[in-house]
Image (cartoon, rainbow, N blue to C red; front, side, top):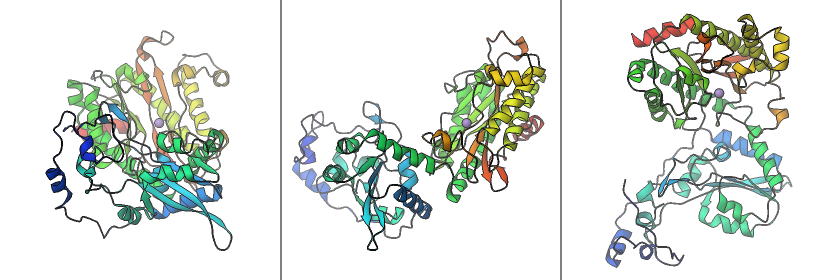
Length: 490
Ligand SMILES: [Mn+2]
């Protein structure tokens, strides 16, 4: 990649950009600077259609407005983060900003300004603050690191208004506006230090937290657009799992990285990215819950635990796990453990329905696993005692699921009473993912169990009369998994 012209330390606002860019590079002559100003076509796009979810984003902003009447609300997208020296991580905007606007641009900020309608009702006027097209007169577009010549064409503010259905304004003027603003204000913290600095004497941590919590709880129940996006994410993920099965021989010849790379290819071609670091855990690595180093061998006779999800361009992610026999057939002990986890998952999925407590599916799955562990003689019964003391957790390790959406562990700021202690409603999407893990160094179990880890995870939508498994496109029952693998490898 090309290197930007370095900036000298003493950068004054008033100086033309060309004078700030010397250092290792020869200065820009007046003739070149003048030459670069002109000879460029007008590329304004006039026939843009609004993005697909403008109705939904408007409804979300209206709900937010109703909750905080008379208050200015500031929701930043966030800024680029340095990876090292002058390279940055791929940008992903804050979910709060993307959820309310459909836009994902770095440095963007949504501001809801309180207004009173002629009939006396209070509401808000929304504005998205964005960086406009690069200025060609002052050389910004080719001399600044954020110039469009370096980073690519941006939408003009007029284009952004058409796309997102929200009036757009120049973000470079926002900090000053916020500094001068009066009246109550709240900001979503943690994304944009510059915006927070402009508001530091106007906001409190407690009030800002209320805004963050409300935005997280808004996302607990998904609208029809979101459910469609989650299904897309799952469908791409199903194809990604199929891709992996087809190249298991290449993974055996290399490492778990071949699996990670194969799934990533599908995620980047069909979506935005993976929704989280893929867990490509072969053999005993399956017992490490967040195994993302993925640098181990893949061996025939071992299991592969693949926990991965494609994230759509709108940021909705799948979260699916399958535990597959690398050679296509489960051994006797692998099948025994796998079938127990399958049975637990079936019990968990059956407990997902409107009106059920959120904790029910976890309890149902844990009971099955505890029963199996007692039956196998690994822990002393009765089952009630095991569950009461939580003794099964040596091998079940984690909760049985979580909300799913724009974050893989979605709605994390929601209060306990609306999430973990809450009741399931149609439109919620959650994972059901029981597992059993026998660590390689666990001397409390017979040797044949050691180094085996199994998790089965599906993405479940709560419907009016029960649930729908969005990831039913991937087989789960052990014999169906074997048939499916054989058909892909054949
Ligand atoms: Mn999960």
